[in-house]
Length: 483
Ligand SMILES: [Zn+2]
View 1 (cartoon, rainbow, N blue to C red):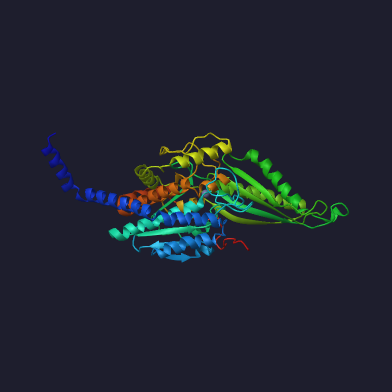
View 2 (view 1 turned 180 degrees about the vertical axis):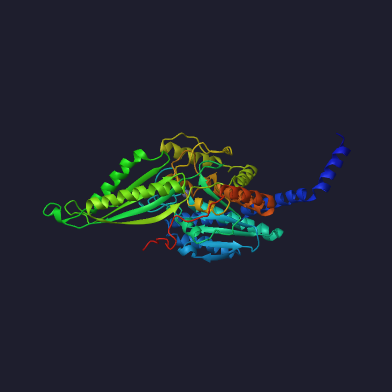
């Protein structure tokens, strides 16, 4: 083909599809500007991640963490609504007023007893027994805010119509925050929702999570001397034990994906006092809501039987319940493409050394950091865990499972090691990449109507005949800590 022919061919393509070429070029420019904006402003987000790491506030106690992010977004020009869905630490930061509406989720809760000095390869608590960011939500919160602010910067500069919303979601670790926000309609009207999570792999997962009910059963009986007049007592602990025995015998007859686990937070004060109060805390999980509801009803029948046998009374407190995660493939693919374009975090020698020292200390393979991107494919198994992003995914087309490497390969989740990495240069570098992927993915969705339409079409097909109804009873408020 001669140069002249190529020229004529290109010219005819441009004449036939002028918008396509221009839009693609414009979009690339906007994406580049978003990533450059994150690079130029990364110190602000590094400071936010470090501050939230230091606050280390557990679920529903994230007052300083939420306020730090809300203030940062407000200073940047977002309108912030605080105290949404009955939780003082939940907020929505909005920029723009027209469609399409892009949502980005942020989390910031720490975990109990995972205090750890940042950036150390060996275990050393800042304060023994204190909370720590053993799931890296300090990076999650700051990184998501960075993405939202980068999108806003480009929207303003390039006059891109649309709305960007950053959802400040508390209490992910107890799968509470987004459940109550979803129940109150906080996510209604959003066209596409994105989230990420710190991790030891670079990937976009399409794995479904498990639906879950998180509930307590309290039994009340009568106290008496354990030896002198036990016949006058009615043991609440007996009821807990009989309930658990019933549930454990029932396991044989449950379908394979069902998971039931419990602990006994209150089982009495002393052996010589018949306990008049006992409490058992349960999680019931299955691959969908229907399965959870069925098993939940069976477990409650075991509790009723136990109360009957022990002549005690019982009370059920459904703390929270979530759906299984419904991944939107169209939006997940958008994130995958943008992760490929941006590339995985580039770690230096000192970060590789940190990783290998930590792996050596933990007695696991000294592999350093994962630097590849896992293939984008249907998972072979169902995830064992549950997430409250799942509820959002049944209301809005959602890609909520972007993971970027912020920690050494193979270290255990929810551990001091994650707390350490989540406030190191390793964690911050991963957070920058995640922010860029979310920002460029968000820009793509804002600028390309075809993507939103395709994501919406997929969502409607998958949810045909379904209406979202929270697992939590309509009038129930989040159970906030008293101190
Ligand atoms: Zn987490």
